[in-house]
Amino acid sequence: MNRVYFYLLVMAVVTYLVRVLPLTLIRKEIKNTYIQSFLYYVPYITLSVMIFPAILSATASPISALIGLVVAVILAYNGASLFRVSLFACVAVFLVEGYIL
Image (cartoon, rainbow, N blue to C red):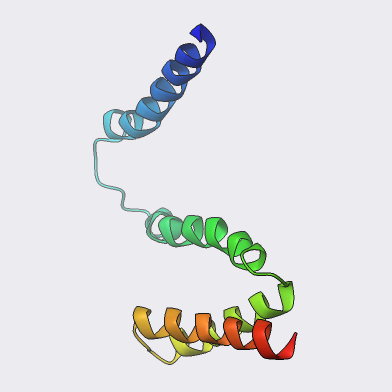
């Protein structure tokens, strides 16, 4: 049980340092446009990297997952709301798994 507390402590310290060090070390405004654009896209890239593998492994077959992903990307690209994108992607997966596969 002591190891669990040690691991939690190490994890808490690392998480704290990752969040606090940039605030303490970088005090002036970042003027480099390359770094600004890089930092702007980091949350989107991180979210994509976390979600993409889950999309392909969340269904019974990779084919239905891929079809749901394609439907979601097309709807999102055309400006549909998040609710509509998720609803139609789920319906597409349901139809492909239930009736085609």
